[in-house]
Image (cartoon, rainbow, N blue to C red):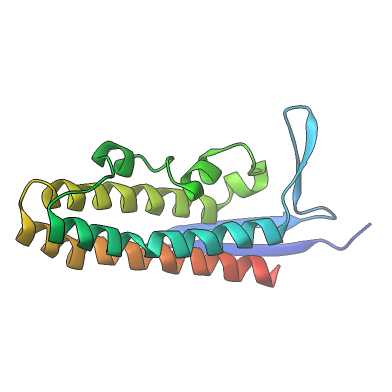
Length: 160
């Protein structure tokens, strides 16, 4: 029998304690054994950081041009991007879904998309100054918070 590892995870005002047994990356879901490797999780986080970093450029372009090929409703929906499809999908095992990092990142990701849609709405409605202020203020803050959260989650995975 493998040794047990006790961990505490703290996010904002939420603390979760857990004991990891001999197979911390496995859980029974849907009648079968589901496995998620740390490598898959880290790759998804890295991809999300890169993809969400490009949003500022897309939004600046929309502010400058007053138009975009992207639908505001599609931007607002946090399950349309690759990371959103993954985080809302079925590939994530139960222990990961029940963990504080997953819950926090899922919330931050949704907030990011709502704010990006708000910037785009203003940009495509001719409210250039308001869109720029939202982009540089609230959107930038949400973006930084999401990336910090993703990096923290990745760092915790690397430690385990």
